[in-house]
Image (tube, rainbow, N blue to C red; front, side, top):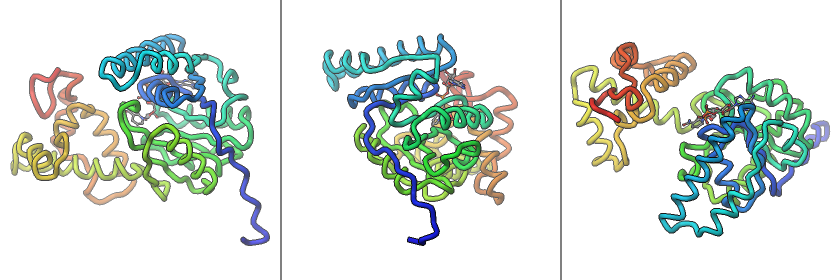
Length: 298
Ligand code: NAI
């Protein structure tokens, strides 16, 4: 080691209490995963109704696991009992061994939150962000511990999806990466490492390139939506084709993501085809509006 380089800051490796900030779709699922693995969870949201909805969503999901035979009644009630909901960040800030942020996808609120977390959490605690598009270095911009900030990009729904993408920021230390991996191992999740702090990480770069090419094939009159999806299902072995996936995820969201990636990377691979823009302009946003690439969606 370079003798002049500062010693790497110590990072807490054993997590028994995790604080999840943001109790929406993702935060509630992540809290549930941690509780099912036996960890104490403090789930924080500034909206008390969001906390109520999260508690109901978690109870419902645990009940489904019980019905399908993958959890016993006792395991489900134990998991429920490990989750405490709070509106005050300070309730979890002093006791958390790891923080996972899953608030709204807006940069400024995330930066503000990370500055607050930085001030209240013990110095050896890793702060993870579930952002789907911001670079980790930008989320950590107001922190004095950028080496202990990491991207931890879960897939929706977290309680069912087994793979999590870890994103290494420009300053993230190898100790912080090791801590995050140890946590994910403990909650029964596999991980992949995105080694550079790039927009789209690994998964959204791959999916957006495929999705946009699928839309282009339809837009250019080369194939029907059904046939594009059949190629993905029967030739590639995907569970769903790109166009039916876009209908499920929302064409408006896909347009935002592809536009952001196209702006950053240039070239054509992520550029949204006209057809995607026309559908969104016409309100055909997929399942949420009833139609998208397919009709009669519900
Ligand atoms: P959501 O809108 O369902 O939940 C966000 C929650 O954060 C809301 O309950 C809101 O009240 C709360 N919140 C906002 N600002 C807050 C603050 N300053 N302090 C405490 N709570 C605050 O959003 P969702 O879908 O759960 O997404 C959360 C994060 O996860 C976003 O960064 C999103 O990009 C990312 N993500 C979302 C995926 C998805 O499929 N929905 C997939 C992977 C990542």
